[in-house]
Image 1 (cartoon, helix red, strand yellow):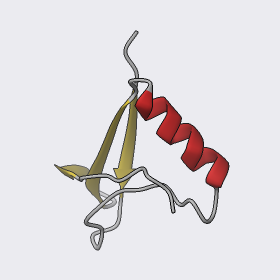
Image 2 (cartoon, one colour):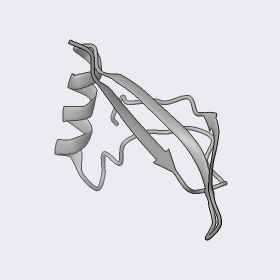
Image 3 (cartoon, helix red, strand yellow):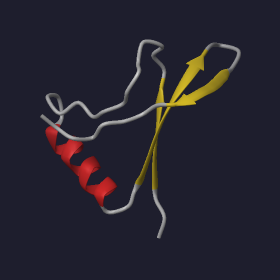
Image 4 (cartoon, one colour):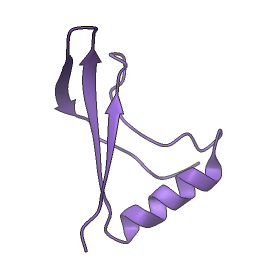
Amino acid sequence: MWAVMLFIIQRTDVEMFGPAWDIDPDYAETLLQAFQQGVEVIPVLAEVSPEKIEIGRILPFDLIGP
């Protein structure tokens, strides 16, 4: 089986992706466990406008909590 979590990030001031442990620790822990079991995590920057959605670069990520 092959699974991917694709995160589309629409902010331009982001350099690294990570779950918000302080806001939703259950989701963050579940995402970490899924990654550890082989789910691929792909966070990409996207510029969204009324005319188009332009996919940019893939961001590094850190799933380890506090």
